[in-house]
Amino acid sequence: MNLDSALQGHIDWKIKFHNAISKQRNMDAEAMSKDNCCELGKWLHEEGKTKYSSLPTYTAALTKHAEFHVEAGKIACAINAKKYAEAEAMLDFGSPFATASKEVGIAIMHLKIEASII
Picture 1: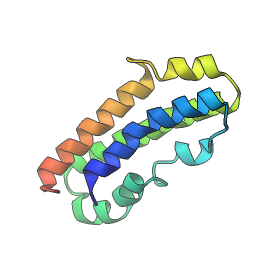
Picture 2: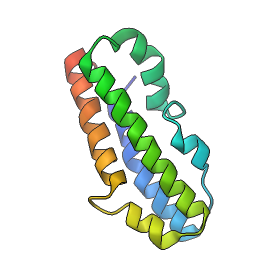
Picture 3: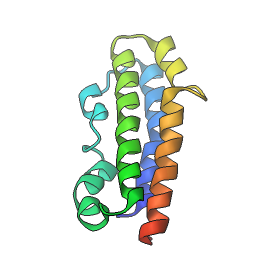
């Protein structure tokens, strides 16, 4: 698993949300709310769990990743409800989504360092 590309995929979610808002397109809020549907989540729940579940940084990464997906699901629900201004505000600096995004990035980098994953 390339954790750098998986993290970049999560960073790109903000762009996907902005695009959905600007084009007024629905999103799969149910899938976005689940932490085991994306590439990183599948890895965390499968191979990552098998190899690294004994590490404290693994538990932190798993928790922060799940929190990120809860916030992502909320934004997708707002977009689907056509609450575009609310969804935009949910993406702002300091929002729960922005905080969750930052924290999952930090947690994955700590796991990467502790587990020596390249």
